[in-house]
Image 1: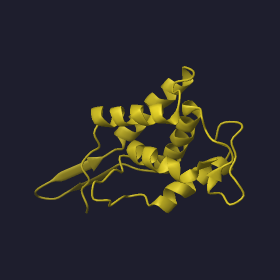
Image 2: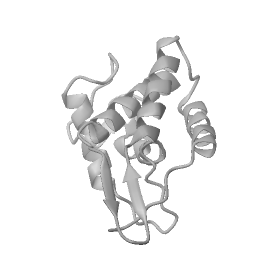
Image 3: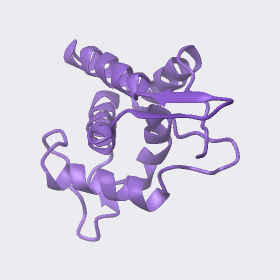
Image 4: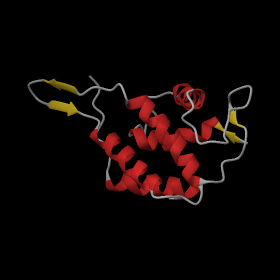
Length: 143
């Protein structure tokens, strides 16, 4: 079985929610609920379902592409309703459009559509970490 909690790290990387001080925008409970919701809405690959207590996936996910699809669909659900955020003060102007997340999801979907893009969930995590190094998140500014 694969615990739903295994998706927390890849989701945080995809969402740019990797604050070194642990001040995450998405709590563990929200990330777990989002993964569970993606299963309930039928966005998971065929053959994978949740256990009765909804904390685990009934089978181990050996296929990295299936793991990536679940993470991709879950991340998309979390950011689908985000709007452009912009504010200005005398000293600073901040605008966040979420382009980084949209680019990641687009690139991931293209890679997944090309066939078995990832041999294991570990290879998916390595790809995510490399992507994150090449496309660092915007600095977090608290209003």
